[in-house]
Length: 300
Image (tube, rainbow, N blue to C red; front, side, top):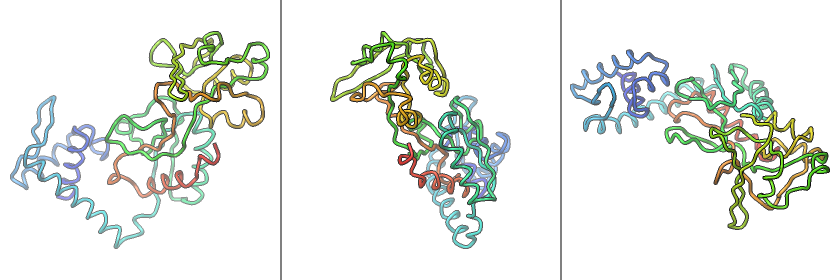
């Protein structure tokens, strides 16, 4: 019955049998059978189901609060008498955007596995936004907080976007003194879902929105960084991606008194995104704590 209650709580949280099935590693038909079994045991209807709609009944709403508390108490009880179950072990699937994963996350994953040899990690370096439910992702590293309120997030890195160009490029073109001057530059930009590309700037209450154009666009920042280093044009990338090249003088920061972003009001902070706590594996909790303790702000 406890398994049936866990399944019911997942269905209530994720809003559908198919979403709950993905999280629990079951088939939708198995989820349906467990809900039927639970309703039969209770002699009460917990869910109103149709082909397009799923809603909790009054009995379901009342039962859900107790079910959540029961599951939390059960997890605490097991942890208190069997601490070995909390050892970091098993498989983790991680999705991270390519440039950040290559520069920062992959070295940390190697350090983590040295400390936790019973954990197996699959890293997906992909600039496409992963669906944690559909793709069975344990942890996604993303820029910005997730729009999906069902997901939890923990900030790994405070980030600032910076406009940069190489000394070679700036020897041939006058450095922009104002964001609107970027209209006359070859801007190497991250691809947008829309056709037009805009860069956003803010300074002491002043706002500027600049439509930029250039001959190189990319979903990820690696090609843009390479182009900027070759003197191809001006780029707007995360400070963590540019830091070593600014320090070496290979790239020069521009418009430093402006806060820049690829979207309005965006901070570009980096977050670890994951499913709610009660679905968390001990290995995942250990990894999130490890990444947070790494103090990435100090290295970026």
